[in-house]
Length: 537
Image (tube, rainbow, N blue to C red; front, top):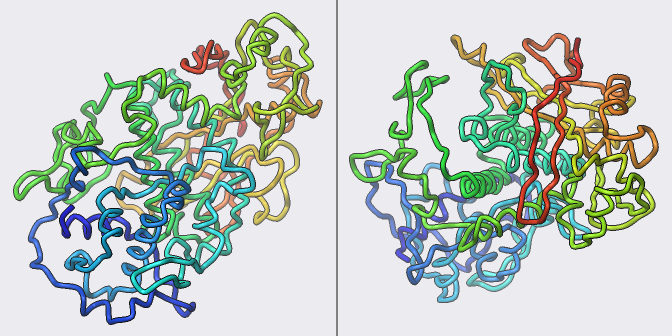
């Protein structure tokens, strides 16, 4: 691996702010680090390329929890981030190269790829959804050329610290359901990829990867957090961890549905090279990213993610059936569909042939996980009919720029806490959808309508288990939701806005009869969406 590629690797990790006036500060190398850096000639173009293959093999991007288990790569990662943060902003680090890394760090750098943060997977026992290395402490231990030291944690932002990490745990069922639904019910790229509202009768494709991406920004940012503000989000420690995971999700989805991709569509926003209404396609230059001195990358050129020298364990040398099994294992825990992917085949049999079963499950966060046994599992007859269950979803449509910046739409079952600061961790919170918007916009873009969803099924299973509603079936669930489902809207600064005053906001409660998978190597099969009522009507 060349020195220049090592430094390009480090440059991609620039996503955190300098934490001022907090000790102990950066790593002490025992010498003036800048004196050991050799300036290279600046390039006049921004050529983007991935690191070279190591021994001819593409390296995997790891989950951040797994990266932490590799001592050398973890230390290299922290040292690189720390060095980046404490470099004079007037001296771009991308113009320098590291010259004296220890041999083992050289080896670690050759196979290092930036990690991702999987915000939709159930974390290890005792952990929050947010890894402890990111959100627990402003300081962290690291081993470098000058021995072990405690330094300012480059993965921790001072602005981020007031945020309650429990909010991510509370939102886990909602985020996981959304992701599982995207994998199982969004086989078309145009629907899966972006949040733009497509007028028409199809109410089964209101969600998208972009929409879920936005929700993580707003929930992860909290009140006044950098992650929720577009202009500053790139400085939050979670930014690249989050975006690496979004790239991973797209790669997994692409592996499932590899016959669909970019279709010609008019541009919504203007840029330095594109005007609103200009038709873009898979050959449109992705400015300003050069593939060489004269040409830009295009969507067709990056369709294979391995072109940038990395891959993910979920797809590397895996069959489609193996990938589906991984999706069911990682992201099906809050769905009734998971009962059919469990090793216990008797549960599958009982759900199809027995109205009332005494097999029960357990709670996880604000939903029900089907992975263990307890006395609170709802009767299977209250969930399934002939191998199908009813998936309940809130379809949200709104003007992206209705409130002049980012805002959040919260759904609750029952009374809403009077203190808005408690909303993100309220035990009766069904879920939150975030609108990730610029502070101000100009021109016709201000009318842009976008969509997203908040799954309701897991919260309803909770209600069935506690005896507050008889079943997931429409005759029971619909009147319960009409009486108990409440909506609230808040800005990124915490201010509350009347939902009925939000321009273009429409929330339709819909459901679909879903055929659960027959095995862990198949996904759920969705029926047509039925619209039940408008929550704001």
